[in-house]
Image (cartoon, rainbow, N blue to C red):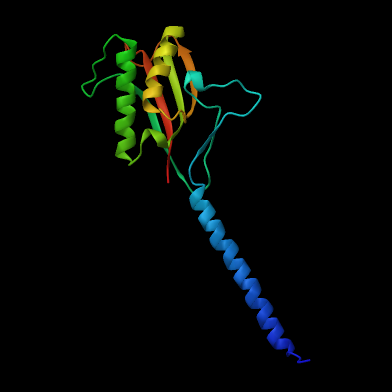
Length: 168
């Protein structure tokens, strides 16, 4: 039986360990690329929020850049407001879209919204849900906190939405 010098055995063991380590490192890098996407989760035990166009939880993996967008209202570029909730909501989403695009982002990159609605009621919730479904037809809704308020910053302003988005 042939004997291998101890030095050769140590070199072979080190090479195997290095190969295994490199495999794990490269596999982790691949997995990190695969999991950079935020996950929207609605855990069992909580009611299904999809009919109201939001998710309970958004998980953003490390290594992403968060982009915070200030509350946008239904005013046009010249500052005018129409006294109609749906029209203002569509303009609000248009304003958010412009802010997102300025950073190379889309609505699918949004993970969190805060929605302020003046004199909130079920009809306004229905409109908000319908317009949200147009933006997120895949129903991967961001987390959203809706807060009824008596008034917003500008006279006649009916809705304001701020957003947090993820830049990968």
